[in-house]
Length: 373
Image (cartoon, one colour):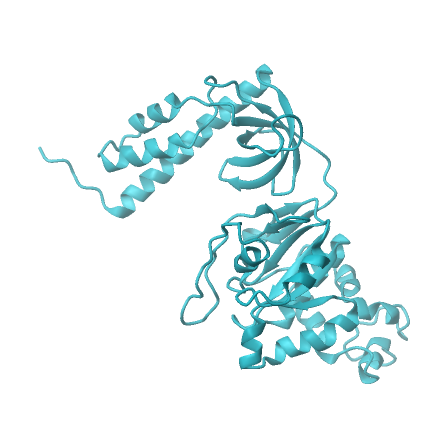
């Protein structure tokens, strides 16, 4: 009797289910091994996150700079690039901590028609761990954590222990001032230093963009440094590198603005895969699917998944108002204590707009965000 041929969708579903089973089983093994106390303990830096495994760089000892694939203890919160952790190294050739052979076993099982999952899981469990596998057993206190909105109104951590946030804009895809303002409010609420980068400046020379021109003209006056660079022409990079020196920064921005290309330009040795802009709406493709930390010689940079929107529902109205830095001198001086700054008489913020001390588009951006909370 001929075997039933699986459709591509069925094969993908089987692969996904079996990967989950393997990851869960390996995570249980990781907890068991960590509890046993086997293997030396090292301090490490989380470089990236792959499903239930994390890539961790040793921060001390003879193995400093070496990378390890680790599971994390189930009692720890979600870990992100930039986290400083303590991890136990697996004993060479023993244990049950996962290896890259697990995925190979799953692919083989599906392609050969072994669809019940037993062969794949048996193959995965037989893969011996080595001295580059480990279990994260502890998390050092975080200085801060940068989050982005996720489905269901939740916040998803992106990066930890950062000094500044580099917001990247470009003439393509279409930039939006309100998205930039949302980033800046989030950065202000964390007490971090923002830095605005206009990438693809060569496109501005060909066709000026009014939004980019506004950013270049107005935002430095608000105290936000703005750097105009072209990763394709390697122009403007020296000034940007100087601003990033001796810091850990997370790079954020819309998909397609050239964040990965910018990282490559700052350090050509870094193999950050570059995605092409999607045709049609030109919103850009998601090159980066999980945040990753890069050592770029004098500073660290965390690349984050591109996002097209940035909700601020976790920010209170008072925090939002304070997040517009040029509003601050006028707050608390309105005629009415509960002034909404929309059309009340004696509003100092409206008066500041009339006097040219606050840009009207910034006040409009504030109301747009406020109405979305």
